[in-house]
Image 1 (spheres, rainbow, N blue to C red):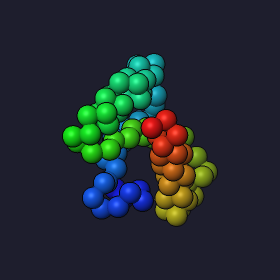
Image 2: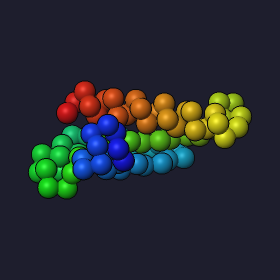
Image 3: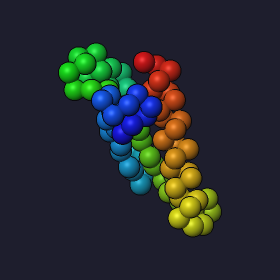
Image 4: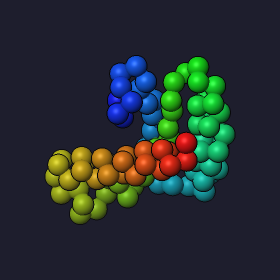
Length: 89
């Protein structure tokens, strides 16, 4: 995806969508954030990568009264994850 770095430097996004977040999800997210994403980004062979996790908070409840609300909430969650990625890069 183009996150402002231009078409020659796209951001590859690993997105995990969960209905319920089990305890093993903490270990998986930690591994992605601590090892996989920094490791693949350090290689600079496969482009830039980020990890984002969407769970039931992003897809349930009154916040999703219509498709526009779904889109708005997903964009906000995505933007927060990208901001965190950029701050830690």
